[in-house]
Amino acid sequence: MIRFATLAALAALTLPLAAQDIQVFGGKGERAASTMVFFSDKPEGGISLSHGQPAWRDEYNAMLPQLAGKMHRLGKDWWTTFDNSMKLTIGGAELPAGSWFCGLEVNDAGVFHLVFLDSSKAMKEGVMPFMPATWKPEHKVPLVLHKDKLQAVVEKMTMEIKGDAKQAELTLSWGKHVLHADVKVHLAGNGQGEAKGAEKKDGDKKDAKPAK
Image 1 (tube, rainbow, N blue to C red):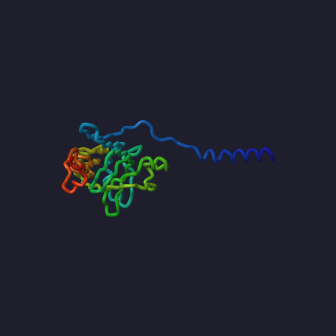
Image 2 (cartoon, rainbow, N blue to C red):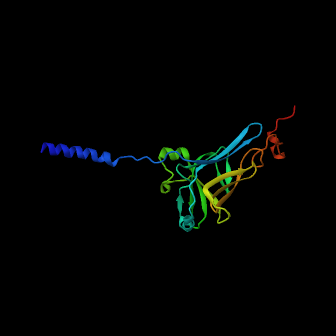
Image 3 (cartoon, helix red, strand yellow):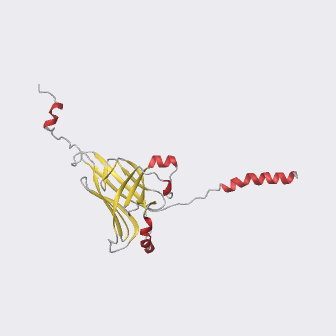
């Protein structure tokens, strides 16, 4: 009886350990990046977008109608990341400066949105890119789907932000489809902030120093 009880106790101790075995996934992978940095006589700010590149499969075309009403992982492996040091307006929606993790949402009407999760908060809460049901995005911006716009298939997902200090654009190309949004960059001196050395308007005369 003693031996049996001892074996039973040992078995009871080892069962929880077996249930807690941790498997490791991942490893070396490719990531694409798109960056814009703005300068005058000094650095004015920057935007950087980085993501994994899943391969396109033709069967994904039939899955497009099934995307509605859900949030979806975007990219491959680790999070798609988006860093901006100035306020942006993307697709008419404002995005404050920050470091973000990104996913994709398609609402019930079939409208695509890029969703933004505060990266520091997500890390502290253990939120992962392959668990969209647990996401609580702080911001989302609308994207316009141009279905079958491209003649040649984009084999690996490609995200790009490009343009200038007055007007830029964000695109996501995959298969023959493109998701697009106009981007306004809020920098001083580009028509969306107070220009350097700008003269004060008549209504601002009360702020001027009195003449000696």
